[in-house]
Every structure is written in structure tokens, then in C-alpha cells.
Amino acid sequence: MATTIKNATLKVTVKEEITLNGSRQDSENTLRISDINEISKRIVTVPTSEITLIAMGTAVANGTFIESDVLYIRITNKDDANHVSLTFKNEDNDEIGIKLDKGQSFIYNGDLSGGVVDTFDANSGGAASSGQLADLTNIYGQADTASVDLEIFVASA
Image (cartoon, rainbow, N blue to C red; front, side, top):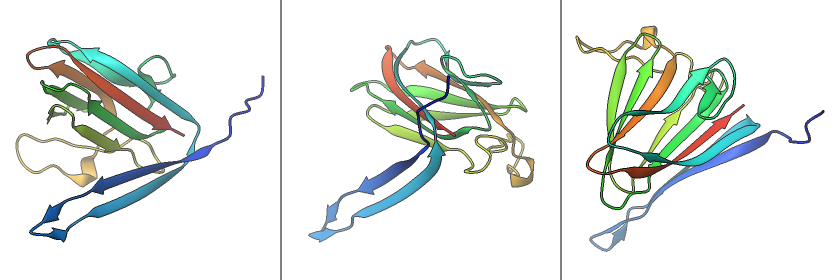
């Protein structure tokens, strides 16, 4: 079976609107990511115990993606009261933690030519090094005081 799906360009727009002292201080930035041929958009209920939200593997499955193909990840906390902790882990077992408060979104951009391969390093003993970036392998989530719903959007080439 030959696919009838044609590659497309994902348009991501980040826009801030604010008026301070009667003066507009708006900003809008747009990124276009070409050659997208797969997206995954889902709502996940995250409990107060840690669960895997996204994994990288050698084949695509529910919640699992090919690391060199993932170009864009957005995680949005749809809860109106509670935050969630996100943990990003790389192939060197380095981890970074992010607090995602109610209503907020977090964007993890892949390298436009290599996906999430060699995209982050973490070092508790000093400064991280861009020369030692490693592959993103997993993203975990854990709700704070009650389960939260996250919207997860992943675009791949």
C-alpha cells in the first residue's frame, strides 16, 4: 500500500500581548518546520506517581517515537488548579526537571536536521557542555496534589 499522505509544513506561532502604561508591548514569532509527515496529539491523565509520557525507540508505537525524526514536542497542562513535574532524561542518564504550572505549555524543539539526537546535557557538578549533548530518551510526568490532564503534541519527519 502506497501512502497518500504528503509531507507538510508545521507552523508554530508564539504570541505575547500586553499593554504596559498605555503602550502595546506585543511580540510574535513564527517557526516553520518542513517535511512533517507524522503527528501525534493526545490527552494523557497524569497521576501523582511518575509515568512515562514520551519514549524514544527504534519503531513508532503509542507514546514511542524515533529520536532522529522528532522535530517538535509541545506539552500543555490542561488543569486549572495543579502543576505537573516533567523530567527529561537523555542517553547519559542526565535528567532535568521542569515545573509546568496550570494552563502553561512547554516546547521542546528538536534539531531541524537530526531530531532530538544530541539536544541536551545536564551536569550537577558544573556547567553543561554543548560539545557533550546527548539524545533525549524519555519524558516523564508526575502530578503534584491531584491528577492532571496534559495535551501532548509531537511532530515528526
